[in-house]
Length: 625
Image (cartoon, rainbow, N blue to C red; front, side):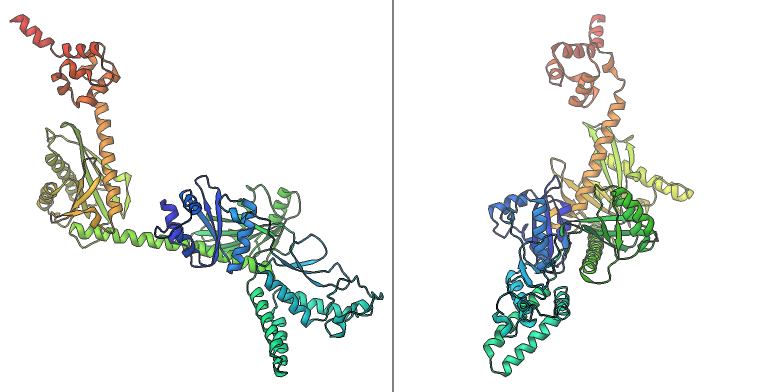
């Protein structure tokens, strides 16, 4: 699991929603719903859980994830369905079907509308509510409405003034006004339809209150079985309407934008609805200063919709824009048709807008929590480094030193700096080893530290305006073991800087950090370092990289002109090859022909040429003798 994915999972909210797993190309490979996003998504990556083969393969291909919170698990179910139908993720095999969630339809195309169950929603005169995830609850709600309101239930084509056969049983038991007689007052009937519309639009308490009255009436009559049936219907109605659906109730396409400002960052969350279905979500971040929310929202809209391929006819916002008329005109011109902004005050649009704002706030919360966790992790790591180094203050400035050479020649040293846990490339300092010879790393390290502290002391004495070696570090890290630590500790004391902590970085034979030496000279295994292991590894690798890089650069400059350039048959590539293989011109001088041939790009003739070149003086001496 990469670090980006790990951070997202660690900061997932414990709320219902939908998650989308992405592969390395950024494509959605799986969409799932969850009552608790954090628990569900985390379960995929727990090693102690036995996963199916499909899940194991899927997890191996997950490189990133996105998610959206919903108002309920039922909303998550529907959004999951819509996203799967839109994106057709590879691993959602069992969900790639054409199952449609049910709607409740008011047949407004009829003179006396009925309440019907429908698996489809058409672009007609009828009114649709839903979709809903529970078909049994939908059927129970339709039954409950028909029990409470005496509207038409049969399939006869009724109209005012026209009789359609004999009056049905529903009329005789008081469950229908008798629309088939042709004399039902249209005003009374329309009032019933108006009340039913309000119930299906969210005012379900009107229906449940009436059901409760009916249940009590049956209980008083000791009709407990009938009262029980009414109670079941009431529970189903409550179940249906406490789980509002993420779905538009018309075929109009729209974008719903929620924006939240925190500090100097604005977080945007959008629901993209096409043909009444939410097909995807969009999240964005943008920088802002002291602008008010309407100004930031307008700025986002101007930037976003001038880069997208399609602009919907309706954009739902949480507040009015400062220059709404001009913005609408601009987007309308880009779209080629009218674009309008809506700030809903009630109903489904307002609920979805509020949910979008809630998701935007959650994005800010996730970033804030992530930053706080990272800050705490960093602070704890720096305090642990301080404790290891033997000081009580936080290790705000850490300097690390490394020496690089080849067989004792061309030795160089570097100083890298980490400030508040982050590397500071501008503070890099390089040293050519001047006084230590023969590859003595203790002497070389001592020289570098001595020269660094001497420069700092001079700058402090002179009160330098642009010092290169100030401030002093809180902790010094050395590429070396106990002896290195002891020697450098003595130098610090000589300068009067014994309040600077010191740590030795112990490497393995591949120059990877395997342990550390604390301020008292004790070796600590890297596995014992619980909080600062990562940053110690980073510092160790960074300083080594810079030391090697400086050494290579120094040697390249140093060999730009040497004795090797005067040897017949030895060009630049062979010269560098010889130096890489032997490490110094002195070693090349002492090598025989067979040894010289071992260097890359060298052959018998070139090796002989080098060998004879460095023995010219010897042969001349013999001749003179």
